[in-house]
Length: 344
Image (cartoon, rainbow, N blue to C red; front, top):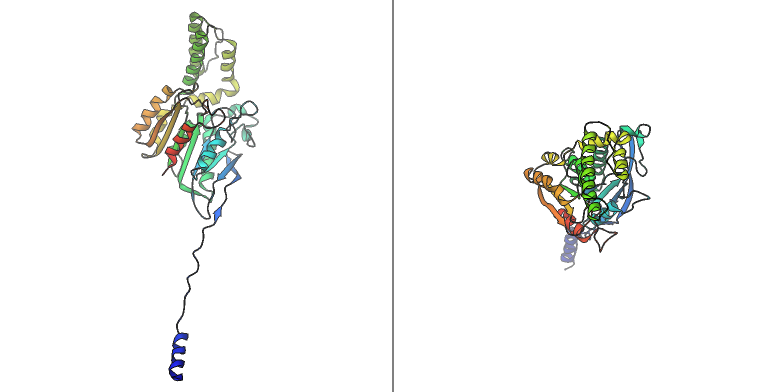
C-alpha cells in the first residue's frame, strides 16, 4: 500500500496546475483638457484638445471645431463684446457622444494673435485661415487618443465654409462634416442680402420711406459691384453706419474680403468623398444666414452623393444656435442634430 501511495504521490507531482489570472479590468482615463501647439505658415497656433473619459489605449472619434467670421477665438468668443462660448459648448455636446475635440485660436485671436502677419496684417487672406485649419486637422489626426480614420470637421458660419474646403482636400478625408448655420453663398452676396433685409425692416418700422429704401438698396448693390471690380465704394447714398461697414471691407481687409468672396460654397461640395456624412443646419430665426441661402449648397451635396443627415431645419433657432428658452446655451434641436451625425 505504501508503494501504491508513493506512486500516486509521484504522479500528482508530475501534474502542473495552471490557475487562470483574474480578467484584467480596463483602466478608465478621466476626461481632460490639454493645450495643443501647432504651426502654420510660420505662425505658432494654440488650441485646446478635450479628451472625453475613455479606456486606456482606446482610439476615439475626434472633431476639429472651426469658428465663424471675425476675431473669434477657440471658445467661439469675441471678447469683450461677445462671449456666447459657441465652440466650448459644441465641445461639451460632443463629449457626451465620446468624441474628442480640438478648438484653436485662429489668426488675430487669443494666444495665437497675428503671428507672422503682425507687421503686415493687410496680407492676411482667407486661404491663410484655411491653411491654418488644415494644420489643426493634422495636429488632431496625430494625437495618441484619436482615430485618424474617424475624424469630423465641425464648422460654424464661415467656419462651415472652411470645413467644406477641408473636407475635399485633407488626408485622410474626414468621416463627416457638420455645417452649422453655414456661409453657403458668396460673402458679398450674403452681405448684400443681410443689409437689404435690415433696410426693409427699417422701412417697415417707418424709419425710412419706400423711396429711400430703393435708393439705399441700389447704393448697396453698387458698393458690392465696386468691391468686386476693385474700385472705391461711393458712399453718397448710404447711411453712415452702412458706409462705415463698407469702408471696413477696403484697405486693411480688402485682400481677405476678395479672397473669401471668391469662394462659392456649392462648388466645393464636388470635392467631398461620396458617402461622407454631412449635417447642414439652418435656423428659422437666423437673420444672418437665412435657410434660403443654403438651398444651392443642399442641392450640391446631394449631387456629390454625400450621406445624411443632410439639411436639418432648426425651429426658432438663431445664428448662435440659441432659442428663446436657451439664450446662453445650445438649443436642444442643435444637440439633437449633432447626435444624428455622430451616432453610429
